[in-house]
Length: 380
Image (cartoon, rainbow, N blue to C red; front, side, top):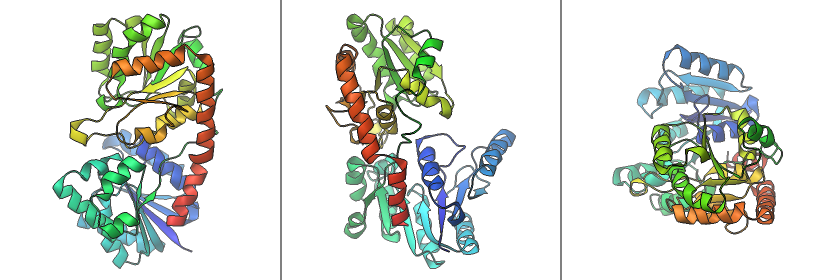
């Protein structure tokens, strides 16, 4: 029976979008035919207990390296080769191509017949750095397929690959669980609990980091409030940028119109999406293109929930929006453009309904997990 070895740093209980992507994909593979080799979430008793509890709940085999950051060292490569042989794996999926895809030649020599390396946003940044470009090129030549999220990341990463490897690239974006994210997911209850039942709500669900653009939304609020005085910005998520964002709220004078929920358990995220009338995350590219949005799965989760979206133009974010149909793409960092689009949506319930319904249909047609998992199975 052919089996697949998944080699990754990005796996729950470590939080994040890539981690959710990999977990959802692996759950849709035959659990008898997959082995996951991953790093440990974090050091200490709490991290070890959380990791062990998560692994015990999985229907497939999970083997953890003791390190919190798995690298293609000789020791880690020997462990991966040992697992490949022990479990009779004939295919390998690198959850993130860089840098673990550098293990590919050793795994090929050990008997792997198919090697797939998945790229995300950070590989697009690697493609701009001379030394990292060379490593990406080696990974492309050593694997059978390099996957990409969307056209933005494909065009950047392909420049670091040989013509042959670039020609073998295949799109494999994350998907959306349309049964979990849907209209009527519990947003009414969240609004009631937060005292927002009678107010127009702009919701942003994401980690609080500068690239995501929560600061742009805060700066847009005075313009939004001039047209919609009762509007409120609901910022859902935690992260290192929270202190700066709270200071910006006070500095901008919009304390009465901005709410922070902090980190929210995954099971409660659909209801928090549903608490909004409009979803907005005007993400922007930073650090000369090294800090860039790979895709922006939150836009698709919002669409699945029936919300129109306002997205920034960073990296692959526009790939998650049908501009003018499911929402709009604005210049990342532009409070004026963001406010203009948000105000247009808050002031037109029919437009919101039409864009929300189109977004829901688009997710069902193209972005369902089951459809994308079948593509991964074919690659493996």
